[in-house]
Image 1 (cartoon, rainbow, N blue to C red):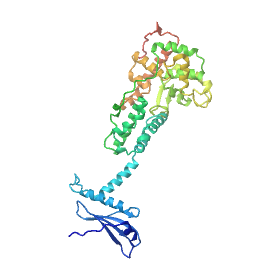
Image 2 (spheres, one colour):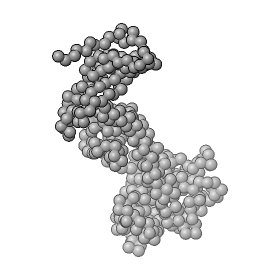
Image 3 (cartoon, one colour):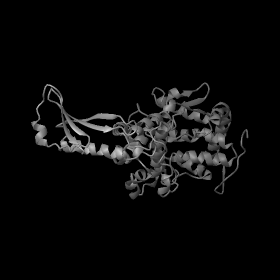
Image 4 (tube, rainbow, N blue to C red):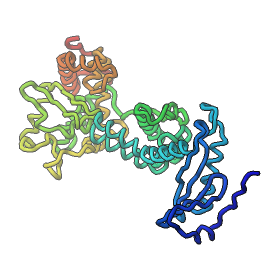
Length: 422
């Protein structure tokens, strides 16, 4: 007849006194309390290993930190595991191995939360983009994603979790923000998959759960409208630095922040080249621009005003700092071009004009500092396109001069000019 073990009580456990040798109190079903000579009371769980058949004595906690009820719950969990057949081994699950795996997983999940993985991804991303853009990327993640999923283990997130994280943004109709966040989430999850934290990217296709944002290109004018714009600019009462930065950006086809932040030490007058360092570029890639006679003439105008300063186009209030990136936009708006043209739209104007004139699209894209997806072509562009770009830039500056004197307009339409060197 099987021996029946009487269950322990809290009163019995509290009253138990240590002896000169360890004392064992049995609760049944594999649970026992070991009382050491020093008075410590330790829970032990005994079971038969499901695969090896050997006896296992496993420490599961200390009394009273682990109560009798908690110890029984742990024992029952172990017995349930032993009775559960593992599909891989065909025998019961070993509690000790299972609990070790759970502990490792909990520690792993605590370390590899979405926030921690996003930070690791962002550190790499920051080396590929400009400092300002990197700051904007992290701010959007911090503001729009971390409050809802920042503490979630990366391997516990699924597509539904990621979509729900953007419900608030969806509710306010910020579809462009959602588009950017979907792209960033995808990159973070792809990074997690590449370093082995997850087996697959759950963010693939989550952008399909939202409406596509409408195209919102920077407002720009048509090529035939350039003469009127230049004539209006010449008549507008604005600071010399503001007028020059607008014209310089137009001639060099640069972004507003690149032109506004131009420094004298970036200009090589000998080679007639402006090299914008990587940290000031959108994609963290240095960009060299051939300077035409017209561009150099603008620098000559600025020399007496800021030649002794660090920046070429200095702020009106603080000449030790560059002109504000929005200064050009404010001036263009006052000229009557509100919702018609912004400083960034001058790049579109140049691109449209040059494409209409039949210049090589690759040369145009290179001049605009758009990264070619093909690495081989990207290297080729830097090595071979520079002189062809110089020819194109000279044509563009000459076109601007023609427009300034209204020699390229006939009844409101652009007259076609011959393309130099093409």
